[in-house]
Image (cartoon, rainbow, N blue to C red):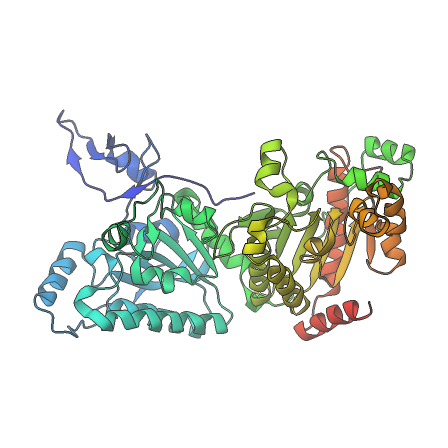
Length: 567
């Protein structure tokens, strides 16, 4: 289940009377240009009902979208504004902006409840000098974060800005460092900081508090970038491609976690509060009363007539496109799953799916390699072979899990890391090495489950766990049997023989004490048995989590170190 939906562009709302003279008011859509009924647009949270175009919204409407009615408490209103550079006409411009918007500055901060859960929110309003960041904006945000730390509350900021406030010069620039330092304090306190980027978010705001969220979301079609399109064209004369610097562009390039539609905004924020509450510790109670599952007669029959497979048969079996993957089992394990995207630096690698799943009330960070479901999908996902940015995305999410005391569950299914030139250019060896080191050091429980292929270091990069399990017919090897036979015997045709010698099956690796548990496949993993396998995995995962209830982070890390030390 993913509630981070997609949408379109945003723009200012301008009201015009219908020329026909009737009682309805019409406004121009910022995307399609058509005239639409204002009341209908308002009911749809300022979204065009013809083309899904997004309108910009003012502060009061934004608060109304996310806060429980009557719960918003505004903070730090009426702060005295100075003119640090004594810039001519600045006071008059501020006065005009105040009178026109009814706001005392471009940022409003305060406390509210979101479905009963308390949070601190900040809202930037583009109507006030394009929400540029002056010293009062920086001060209000910093003070709000400091108070959030005192109250142990999460912080959500709706970002929108044209950048630094030119009339304040270098003083405005200093707000970037000040607000970033405040975010660091919030992180040190173990509290959630989440930003929602709206249209437009540019300049110094982008290069400071907007891009520092533990979770970064954006509204559909929002313009987001450090240097705006006009600055880029004027500075270096570069022509920009269609869709450049949009929320969708940033999602594809791994910079943000997801795009959130307004209809899902409030429940998304509530989900973030519940899934990032480190104060609940290891671990909040979870409901495991529904983990018992009686397998069907069809599955029983499959189990009765199944025959043991040879190692080579298992190798061929895990390579079949019809074999279920981690994402298929997740449907029966997690009550809710929200995907997060990107390595925050280069790209969102679709061969690794990551996010947060819930088993009852217990949030779990989930990482799963994915090969795809169709020929087009296979190509897009490199047949399940991650790129360096895929491993970096996985590590980013695992480190976030550690910060918020969430256990980690990894579903491993890859023939190996992608071996292409691009992977080497982007540092494949370093990305795998860093995953191994950082996973070994995590202070939360890590469970790794090989559901198909476990190929070499590419598989190990997400398989450094406190426990490692394998599905009954999964494989885990130093390299492919073909490669093994070619290197050692100079004959790749001896792959079937190599598969036996290499000891790559679940039973082999259990005997070698490389893995802790074998998960039954009830005659073979496929469409018929995937639900039974998934339901059984849910029960086993609940038992795994229960073992770690009350254990310290140091003890968990030490156990993992000793596990690998014995090899």
